[in-house]
Amino acid sequence: MATIRHYYSVATCFARLAIQRQLEYPLFLFSWLLMIPIQYFSGIWMLKIIVDRFQPLGGWDFPELAFIYGLGLLSHGIMVVLFINTWHIDGMVIDGAFDRLLLRPMNVFFQLIASYFNFIGLIDLIPGMVIFIYGCHLVGFDWTMMNIIKIILVIIGGVLIRASLFITLGTIAFWTKRNASMVGFALSMLERGTMYPLSIFPYMIQLLFTFLVPIGFITFYPSIEFLGKSGEFGMPTSIALWTPIIGILCFWLSQRIFKFGLRNYESAGS
Amino acid sequence: MAVIEVTELVKEYVIAKKERGLRGALKGLFFPDKRNVRGVDGISFSIERGEIVGYIGPNGAGKSTTIKMLTGILHPTSGTIRVCGVSPQADRKAVVRKLGVVFGQRTQLYWDLRLGESFELLKRIYQVDDKTYEDNMNVLTEVLRLDQFIDTPVRQLSLGQRMRGDLAAAMLHSPDVLFLDEPTIGLDAEAKHAIRSFIQEMNRTRGITVILTTHDLDDVEELCSRLIIVNHGKVVEDGPIGELIGKLTPKRLLVVDLQHPCADVGHKSAQIIKQDGLRIWYQFEKARVTAAELIADLSQKLPIQDLSVQEPDIEDAIREVYATT
Image 1 (cartoon, each protein chain N blue to C red):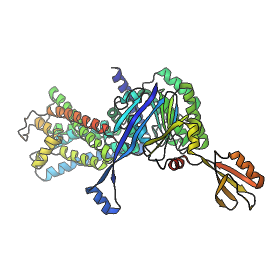
Image 2: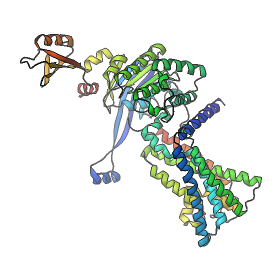
Image 3: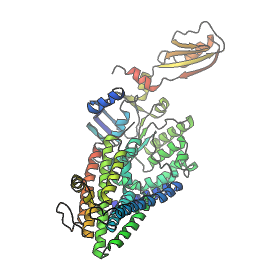
Image 4: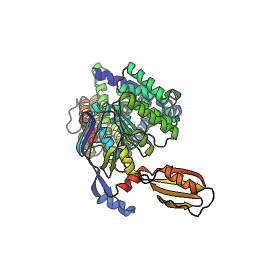
């Protein structure tokens, strides 16, 4: 209990300082405020153009695509708010900031995450919300209590799956000291793997995104259940609740990998 | 009881040897020439409560690596470390709670925010209660004169002010042991003086143990009672500073500027190593002749305009003295 209070008090102080730091640069903030919604609304607009001009994507029409895209943006947005520091582990190793985390009497992963509460990322969530609710409206989503709980669990699971991927990639920076390109690669992989239905991809990619890097569980498999579509690999149709389970599993695994990395951490410079 | 005990500490690195040019880079990619290098090679020592120890050696001698192992950042390849009786690798959190660590070249302060905000965060991280925090802040503010700049963003502080801020940050939680890695690097004389008197004050009033790495001979002479000298990953000397300084720096330089040229400028106990116009460099051994004697002798026969005595660079001296080991 005392430990929880300790971590909570540090987390709130970190959050306050992060907000203060971001407010030091108002122009930067404003440019994000403008850019991010443009980026996502143009994304959904492109989808609409593609689907209107050609046939539906792998049997998914525009309302269903909007639903899956919005769902993906929501877990992406929350991940960016909470876990963005996992993208910068390599820089922290090189400039010694990571050494400093190890010199403080708290959990290293907690400090890594809590030390940068990215409230600019909340802006990412706005277009996500709008597109998702629009998608729900188009597909006639049934807002029962059960479905709402399921959606929340699916989003949490999606956040955990995304975070696990970046934690694992960040841990590689303990050895390579550089992994900015991998973060970029993972980001575009996640975007493509979550905004389109998995079934349009080649069979090998579907296997990969289901069993090895379970990106399919962030949006595709839960959407199958919510939208009543047919799945692959003989997956049961009541598959939405697998997302939080797989999320927790991935997160646990990424924590093991992170701990292993810490034991072999070599620091950098003098 | 020893605050720090280190036995047979070893840290090995894998170093890939790279050859020149693109061909070398490609060769290194497919057939890396890897070899194990011992950055720290069997170091043992123990440090008692209240000591101020200089941990000295040339670049690449293994100083930083040792400090990083003592503070739990790195895991040793072999050997044991006990800090206040606990292994930093077994229980990192318990050990680092008792440590204050300052890296002269890097700050732990928030660059964009006023200095005080960083202290506020550290208060929470180390769970310092209000009373202790206030007491510590009062002492630190007085000794380091923090009140002049506590509301200034860290990015606008001078190097000397920033270093004072970093020292205060390391002391807020009343640590038992203070690790200082080049705390005076790049500072002017006044700032150096402020840092040194702060370290002495903390040692005197709180009995804090200090381990200091530095390139600055004045730091060592003013602060340390004991030196541990490392070279090529090994301890080559460990003892009271009085004995070691003489051994390390047997020779000094006397630089003399004459008013006009003279014919006979020699001295029986000093060697002229360089002469440039009216300026002459004499090298002499401290054990054979004191600077005062030499100056007295020379000033009798030479029209001296100005003079200065120079200490040799500590790293050069270590390299020279321990070249064979």
